[in-house]
Length: 308
Image (tube, rainbow, N blue to C red; front, top):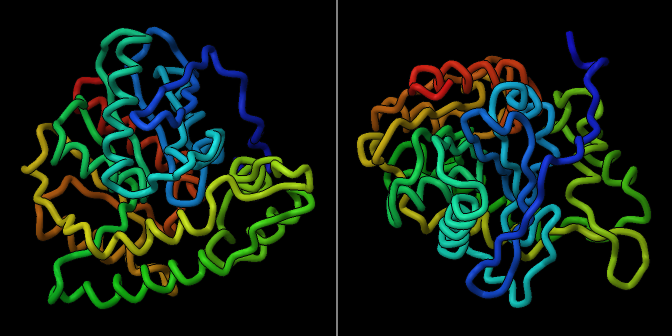
């Protein structure tokens, strides 16, 4: 087991640069890993931050050039005013990120590796703006099937429940450890690797502008809006609708008490023809629960795609 030995200190990047988005908001890019390797771009789920996925993406740094970034109003980014926080904007932001990365670092084979909210934004981007990847890996995107689908009711209830939870969550913390303890006491985070609760808390908090402790980088209103918008996206595509290879990696659909996303992804894969696997014994944050297994699935897929 690696849990007790895993070092959860985010290493200094090889390089950092900013992406200016179309409304003046900025995204901070961090370049890690092997400069000469195939490029992979890694981002996070709603209300989280990419640094906290370190247990996963550090497994890729020996062989790949790993570009880590947070979507607007998350993580290391300064919150935008107005926030312009919706999937249409996140999709356009991703296109600007890709443009800037190519301008800054040059073109090379590139894979997108995205979880939850960012996976859904990447799907929307590929389908509506254009395919710009050599491969795309989607970790447990919480897609909502069409109304009338057997899985719709469970996802509708789940997203509505999350939106209400987000609006009511604690916003201010005297110390990072206070949020780490909240994560540690949460059933959803019970299986995170050792150190991940502290790392997540440090990654999603920023110093309060008024000098009084810490506040969430992603305001609860923005987090709730993303949950609520899930029900309007009509995002249930066939794998063949994408312009290249896509891998769908889900949480365990047989896990008792797990969120309905896992079973919904299994349905999406079966009905719409995805290259799909799930990671046994994991919930929605599978990359932080079983990072080695998740990284191995990615490496295998990228090798099949000619991206070693």
